[in-house]
Length: 610
Image 1 (cartoon, rainbow, N blue to C red):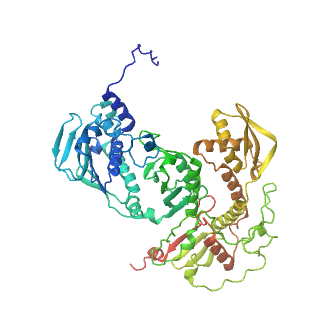
Image 2: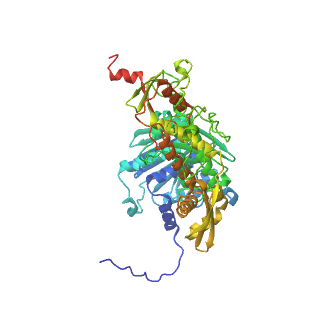
Image 3: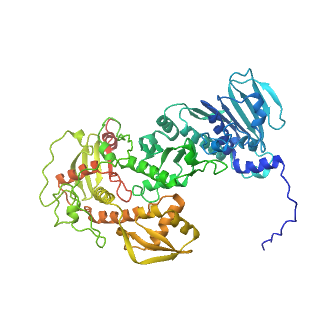
């Protein structure tokens, strides 16, 4: 039988003591030892440090020591540093609205000192000696130290034992502390970081370039299995690296996003980056990436969450589009075009460094007629998918470029000029075997041709504005206040997507027009999906996703089928088209279209050289 809580007795309103106020603030800021590490490393980086050393005992519960070689704190300012809302980083509302430092609240040291035994040792340049401040007693005495600051936090949560009971094992807390430092290390490659635990060195990252730091922190494989991103869109710049689809993981634990050097968990950036992988990942696989967004500080509000891990953008749609386009463009170049450029690199295809431009990417000059969506089907598919006008319109199942008249044999070229090599055989009517400079290439011909057809259909559709079809009878539906507000605030975005959704009554919305290509679907379901995405992510890909699903179905049905016998000329034509088609490394469903077996791997299979 559940107990019924009785209302507490009436108590007078009174001001809380400072210590209790600080402990309440600590509940927001200090969740576990890793929270302390994050806040103190923030301060170290804001001080201009070039080397940060973290020392831990018992996973940070018994001791957290953060040493830096930054500017230090003057003797007379040390007591003030431990007071609540005391900071050197902002001094006015204008400063708060354009924060350029990691910390700015002035709460961290006071909150940490209220739930631990804290010592603050610091020496600025030009001061004769360092000074040590005991937070519990307020005692200030001289000490020995070079320029910089050391903050020691002992016996975390000793004054609030109930909080300490919620901590995990030392190994788990250590892992969280290392992760906190790792996130800072990825943002500041020019700064060295060292982590010690129980007197043992557990992590060390030396200063270097961003790519070197990514390799040191995430491993060389991340660098080899990712493409560089550098995209400028108005006041925004997005840089970093995006993992190729083959590097995707089952969990979203390798997704690092930074805004002006601050690690954030932001739904706009997360949704934008995930949508860029929409037709490249198989099943529920999660992409890996490290993305850095640079934006005018006045266009982003970092004063949203006590831990400063969440932000709010002035124009979320602008950020969403920039991040999505940056990742999409970086992933668009086919790695097949680089498969055979270097036969001496141990079988790893070198990945080109891409600088994303605002101008649309130039596509091969395919001669394609327009796509009439009559009843969601395309007439004369053979002509539509023929890259050079030689297709056989009487045979819709004919592969791209293969008509009744055989194509002329390709001119002899050096083997290295064809990254996917020359076709040598067809296996079981399913796979194409080709020889290139590195060894053997195996191609799933249906998956590869499906992607080629799909990309051509998308290119042709993208060249046209989304046309809207008015509904004879508007479709009305009961809407929540959030849906009504989103529809009213996003009229321009909805019109760009080919939708017209207007208030019908204070609690009802009416769908008056839908995109022409989706006219046969459920207008209410479409409108609800778009409004939900707009409300959550300030950008929607529902219409594009639905359109692409339709095009993917058409491409799947029109692609060359398994068990179809192909000539060598036909197989070579498919290989050449793969080298020129965007995203040709995965089919529309995220499965790989080709694999490389190097000579070294083949030799190992037959124990050659042993």
